[in-house]
Amino acid sequence: MCATAWRWPVLPGVGRVAPDSARCACPDPDCVVPGAHPFDPGLLAATTDPRMVGWWWTNRPAAPLLLATGGHAPCAVSLPATAAARALVRLDQRGMRLGPVVATPTRWSLLVAPYSLERLGELLYAKDHVPSSLRFHGEGGYLLLPPSAASCGGQVRWEREPSAQDGPPWLPEIEAVVDALVEASTGAPGGGSRLAY
Image (cartoon, rainbow, N blue to C red; front, side, top):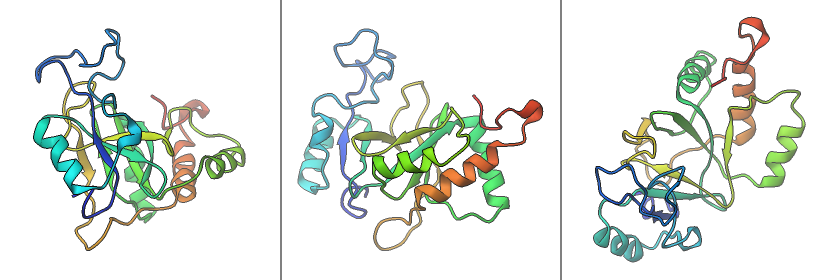
């Protein structure tokens, strides 16, 4: 669906030594994201070609599903799961329209329209404060998609599923999401951030 209907470039993640193992199948014994990263093939192999995607998952049916972010593909802003749940409630109360949201047990990612690193830099430079808990998945990055196993255990799922429609799901602009998250982060007791870890 991601590759063929939505034209999102995907590739298989490296996976784990065994389905019930916590150890990554890559050669790094201290891998910090076990199973949830590209290895062979590398990130540049991401494609929307249905034949290649079919071949990959026919040969590795349990491989994690990775989205290569940026270019014409969605990008994302991620934050800790507890803070994200609170932020979504506040954004819903404000009537903000969000796109799909990917959830792991520890972090949620709000998918946004593609953006350049220059555009992101200008946006962040213009802010007085940006919560340090935010991570940005742009050009040259990747994001683990459902129904993959999360690197921290558990499953990746859609907290907000892509809408059922013809063509790719609608995605908000990065500026709108970052502005809303910065606003939602203010006002914690003691002057801290509501989006803290």
